[in-house]
Length: 492
Image 1 (cartoon, rainbow, N blue to C red):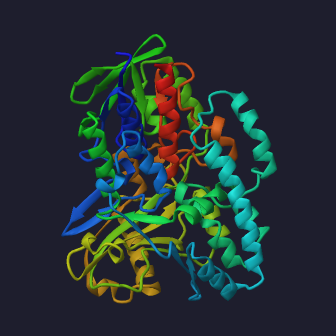
Image 2: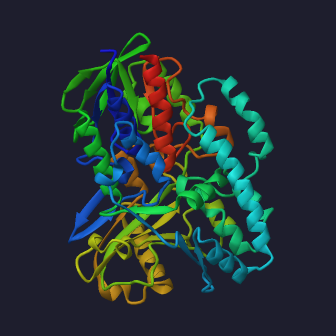
């Protein structure tokens, strides 16, 4: 049994961990509650349109290729990654646009267009970003923080880069134009962090994108999930779908296996959770004292916001609408205060995803696939009727904003649409409070202060994914898989 593992959840973190274990000769079974793998990277096919649930921004392809390299294989045989350019098209209510990319000349021209004096400031910010990238991602991104001593060892780097400052605060020290400050700080929202409070360490995202580019998997993010599943099963791994784990069985301070809703049970020498942290401790470990104790601790922590996503398919092709667009609202800090404070405001900023401009196969011929995403407060802070009339109104308001800002005639050309709410995150993913990114990535909930990759009491229970170090986002959860796999293999 010592060389048999069960991974709960087939999200990116769970799949990456299972691939690493199976590559090392550990017989591994993934147990997934939903009918398809992917976790938050679920997808739907409706009326000929393919809709990715998210995430949709793929960065640092080498961290993915590394999974295939473990057994001398090539990711390109399973996944076709397409570069996206520009990375993002930013749009403000006054009509200003800004194309963000790693094309040095083009990017500097975009900065100069807004504020010429900020070109030099951007260069200084990029130097800072490279520094925190080396310390926070290259050196520590796949290292497990299991004791406070490991945090102390990381302290000099955190002090050097003044990690207690916010990303927005750091950006503001380098550039003066408010639009540029927004352009260089919004990225933390993609991993659940408030730019006004998230540690400046997360400025490393800029270097990840600049060095590695932004990519899209042909067929959708779900095609990357499918490629990972193909690799895992080719290695001999087992994927069990549509059977929710209801209990992690234990004996003393050891996990012994899992039991599912169907009554299926499997024993294993190691159990790893890629599911929601609170759900794992409060529900799956309900019969062990560790479960209730940790759940009480987690309840006191700060959880990231949720998301409201409107998926829609329309007639026509729109080559002038970028693959990734950020539609900033009339407020920035005030809106963030509302989202993280628990107010559901009438205005919003949107992330508009347009995958069919890169891959026409995401929509029927002559049609286009989109989704519009608005960060919103989680269910513990905002008591909105997401399943009822308010949810319908909110979806209509988002479509109206997209039509007004970038897609005239949207309503007339609308073929199909549906929305996904914080309540859906809670139901489908057992996400605590409907949080879309697990624990909020503030400094005092990072590294050692985040859930540990190996439980402190149940010695063969491990965690992977957004809730553990280093955090959310594809590179983050894939990095957590590397850290967790190293622990598990060392423990064997």
